[in-house]
Amino acid sequence: MNIGFDAKRAYHNGTGLGHYSRTLIRSLSEFWPDHQYYLFNPKASSLFTLTANNIHEIRPQHFPSTLFRSAWRSSWVKKDLEKYHIDLYHGLSHEIPVGIDKTGTRSVVTIHDLIHERFPEQYNPIDVKIYSRKFRYACQHADKVIAISEQTRKDIIEFYKIREDKIVVCYQSCNPAFGKEISEEEKKKIKTKYGLPGQFFLYVGSVIERKNLLGICKAIFLLRNEINIPLVAIGEGGKYKQQVKDYIKQNGLEQKIIFLSEEPSAKSSEAFQSAIDFPAIYQSAIAMIYPSFFEGFGIPVLEALWSRLPVITSNVSCLPEAGGEGAYYVNPNSAEEIAEGMRSIYTDKDAVKMMKEKGWQHAQNFTQQKCADSVMNVYKMVW
Image 1 (cartoon, rainbow, N blue to C red):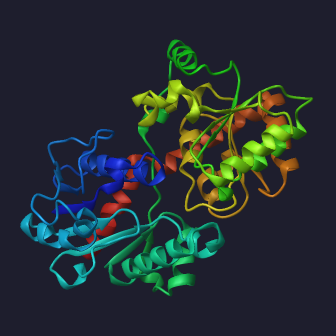
Image 2 (image 1 turned 180 degrees about the vertical axis):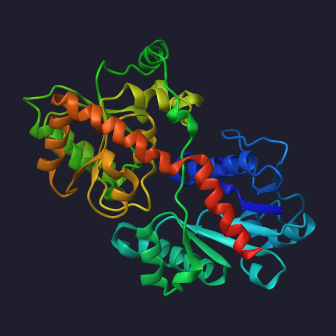
Image 3 (image 1 turned 120 degrees about the horizontal axis):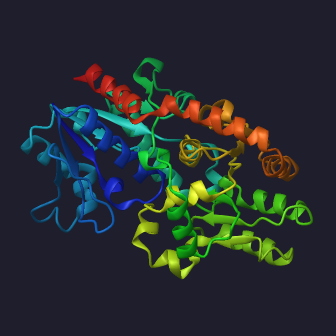
């Protein structure tokens, strides 16, 4: 089978959608090598590469597609699907080409979340309309819809009224590098490279309201006289990030919160920008703190479980699906509960040992092989 992918985010996105795309493509290529995988990429990338004998990168070649790359991706790419005899096309992030259902190419779309529907106030109103139109169209016109969690499946049914039998839950995996034990020598090297403290809590994610970094900062304030362990935050943000910084300054927490993504050592490091150094950073931390109000899945939770890193996360949305029995769950609205989780992990070594073991066991439900097989089963349903 010739399988095509919307590969824009696989080549250009350094956050969740990009990690999902790259991990899935590499897994399919490895575990289902008899198929050919065509990656339709609007423009060249200097950050990420995907190479294998059965992986082929396709970019627009002729005018006007070379000039109007967005139009090529959203519609004109259908001519290239025909040219390369693509049997099935997978929109990896909420979209499929307009009109693909009128061609001979079958299609699947992955829906990661419908957060713009649940929390429209956190988005530009124009963006909400655009997202809603694109996501709804993809769900209605694709042959099958992949939801990355039960929570997302329920949301697709609730907001877009898509038939239950059209939606299949396929959990995602993460980069296998997180599951490989990093040597003490390498961790020391990475700590020195980025100027990391000897001990630290870790937050990874966009610095936006929904992901609740401010809640973590409030917990650190509550613990200010008990635990002198800083938080390392990895992620970019805008208006909400400034709100967090204002709180930090007002409460004298400047020495307790490190915005690593702003440090020159991180900005100038290709290994940081492409997340190559992340497994060593994870395995050097005390715990991952991820008390998000809502997620499609929450890939940093899974990355932490693979890293044998204790996780504090929310008891809402899909996060119990991601964390299983290995996580410490809190009400994301309660800084007190977040603080208690941090205190418990810092002081109770036996509990930490148990969390690491249970977390590792739960992570085995999300191996690359299992995730690739579940997606391939969806392909077989429609082709």
